[in-house]
Image (tube, rainbow, N blue to C red; front, side, top):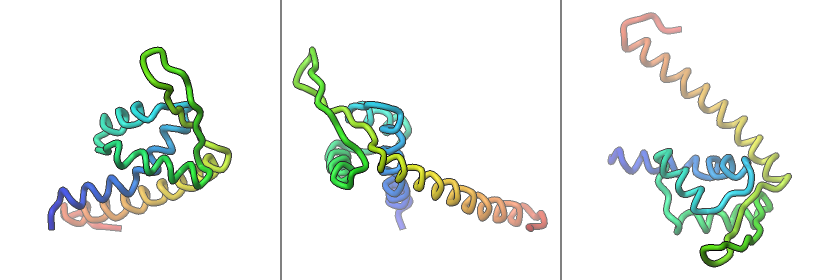
Length: 119
């Protein structure tokens, strides 16, 4: 098995969640999303982001508006819909449960491995 492939799959699995979180803060332009995701080491390219944004829009979770730009063509700015906010809240709850469950397993493993009694 290739560890890099597994790492990429793990990151891809949370990409939609991260994108919805970024959009939930207010109007955001796609290149700003790419920048934030890259800074967080969730590598994504435009060829991945734009189809995902289209799927989110078609699902009624996000919407966009065109804004004129002084330095080029108009830009699409994305926002969450009310449905998108409810969806994100549900994902947030699932994320917290997964983090807690994963940490429970990891901590149990590391305490057992270090020779301590595990609970």
